Length: 160
Ligand code: FES
Ligand code: FES
Image (cartoon, rainbow, N blue to C red; front, side, top):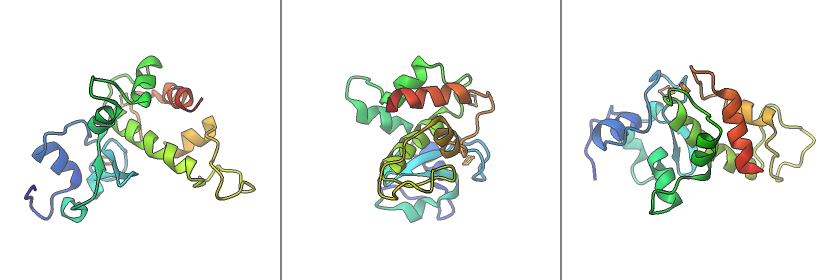
């Protein structure tokens, strides 16, 4: 149990109160995606969420992705792919990119369309993550270093 001011955002709770500094504060306005975490499996901008409203919900940060992969310092397959593909430079956006990509994989598997999805596709069928789909679905995560092409390559490695 953590007691926080009712105005505390989920991002500040994670970083300031719980010491989970993997999630980054880029804009603090819901514009950059650096603070993306998984809330009950769905990706959210934690800078826009009030911490007190999330009581009882499962929240996974980038630290949790690795922890879920195994006890011996294993990495989530996406984390491994980002390393193999050199999908970052400064790394500031990377935790958000990773959490967002994990959420994206689940959304596509569940058949949730994006704006570039073929409208003829059956709504309950998984969406094939083409490079255009990946770019569109990760467009809420900005990278000031411009590592976008290698991020797409890394995601494609995981779904191959
Ligand atoms: Fe949350 Fe930029 S810090 S979207
Ligand atoms: Fe630097 Fe994306 S790797 S902001």
